[in-house]
Length: 197
Image 1 (tube, rainbow, N blue to C red):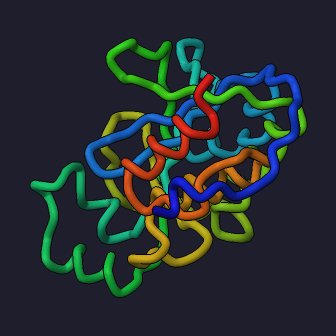
Image 2 (cartoon, rainbow, N blue to C red):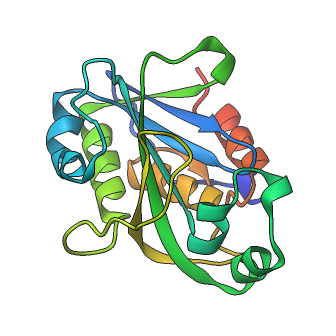
């Protein structure tokens, strides 16, 4: 229901920056282009091994979630009683960061066009999603050869899921989006209602 109740008053600005939302088995990731702006804003990621300056890297991937649930769960078959319980009752949060090359058509990416102001706000919201202070990488194996987990800001619980975080970032960028997006379906519906072009 929260996905169909809009929040935010989006200004009718010209969108020059294309970002994307991509759904995995359980949640959405936010993808931003690896351009001069993003490479500058997230240059410190390369200090920890995320290859943001690799010649074939075109997109920077961000995913936020519960530490136990996210770092140990690739899909629903990987769920453990502990990770489910921590996800329901509350857990520390982590940010997963990765890079991608050109997007394949089978990824079914949902794109959003942002103005200069909106893009700057989105990058700022993503930066603020990391834990305050210097980046804190976690000694946890990722899902790919190029991703890393970092300590994130805020707590994960049943009312504030990884998909709720996606909605928060969209609204922080000055975009119109559903007021509460707890499920992948909620994100898809909000995008279709308020951002699909």
